[in-house]
Amino acid sequence: MAFGGTRKKDEIAQLADRVRQPIRNDFRVAVLSLKGGVGKTTVTVGLGSALASLRGDRVIAVDANPDLGTLARRIPAQTASTVRDLLQDEHLERYMDVRKHTSQAPSRLEVLASERDPAISEAFTEDEYLQVIEILENHYNMILTDCGTGLVQSAMAGVMKSATALVLVTSPALDGAQSAVATLDWLVAHGYEQIARETVVVIAASKTRNAPVDVNMLREYFLGRTRAVQIIPYDEHLAIGGFIDLNEMKPATRSAFLELAATMVQPFAIQPPPAYYGGPFGGMPPQGAPMPGAPMQAQPQGVPMQAPQQGPQVPQV
Image 1 (cartoon, one colour):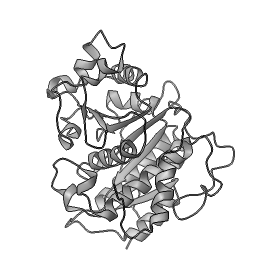
Image 2: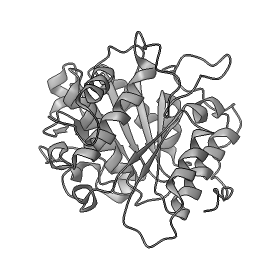
Image 3: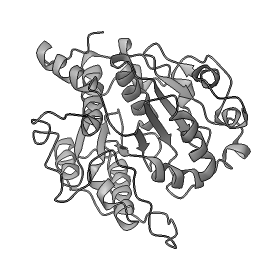
């Protein structure tokens, strides 16, 4: 597959090599957004597809949205099974026992669908989510979670306990950017300051009538608070809401997802190249920071999870 875009062939090859690097620790990435409709599920599938198409690992995306998540609708369905069916299955010794509960995209990305009954999906708890991860980590090297839009849902507590990296998705619209800022503020306020600094922000372009924020200014703002920022250009193939296929994306869009995949893999690489830190999407790790890939530390006991307040204003255009 040609990722292409305006990048030179050798640059694309270098990014692909970074994606293929052997990794250490558990690659469990949570994809977050407080605001719906900014492209969180699209980014989950795009990132997962780029990883699965270039690596030999098994890569799976889990829909942890309690409000009728749409992750499974973005790839061709191969089963009607959901996360609830997986939890009720008592015979999951082999990979194929789990595989019957997932659908697989042409990219090799597998998807585990959320429960379709709203009453049941609301009951998806922290413990149940952790049980799902415990099952999947025995068979998959890379696990992505498409989270709901609430930070105080029960399953979200499990996500924060198990995830080893975060992707925060926003749009270039003012309301989307403010929600992303509020998410970072919530992470810092609840004991996840280190993870907030290691977060990768994705700005997913869209055709919107909301007041846009200057993308370059927005990018610089988030680079001051997080590890990296990736801009995904507007692509009609992604905007229609159907199946997501890397081959149907514009070359520039595929290239952006390739770079995002390389950015996410890099901290987990067994031997990161010296040039990793620095450059337009990187930066030196904070003094005394733990190695990326270590599980997130949960907030202190006795501190309840609270909904984030209105975030500070993003830089004005």
